Image (tube, rainbow, N blue to C red; front, side, top):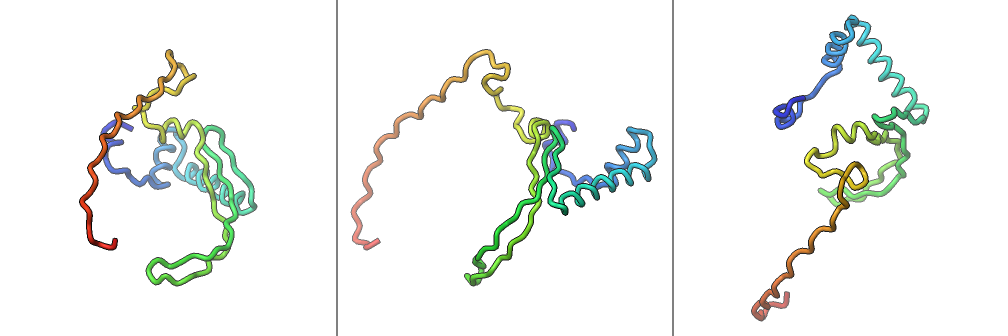
Length: 141
């Protein structure tokens, strides 16, 4: 991805587009690539349905979490409503994805990771000048 791509609005990439790219790169037919990708996605769903945790090193971890039943409030009507317990899929980002997608490139290196000098604590902000007292008011508030 080029710099101009990252500055523009994000695009939605479909499975079809990924199939086309992978088929071109691997010299496989689109039908074979689509079947492999679909089988991979189906297997992820099947394992999560069984309650299993899927770990793809450097990429991330998929797991199912139980959410307890609770009482909530409709913000529009203020009516109390019951929200039943449910299972949700949680994804935890892996190291490689976090480094390539999530971390800002402008951040300085973390201490102990190739940094030549120790990190200095930030300078404290300048002291605030005392603000004048507001005029007295007859309001009870």
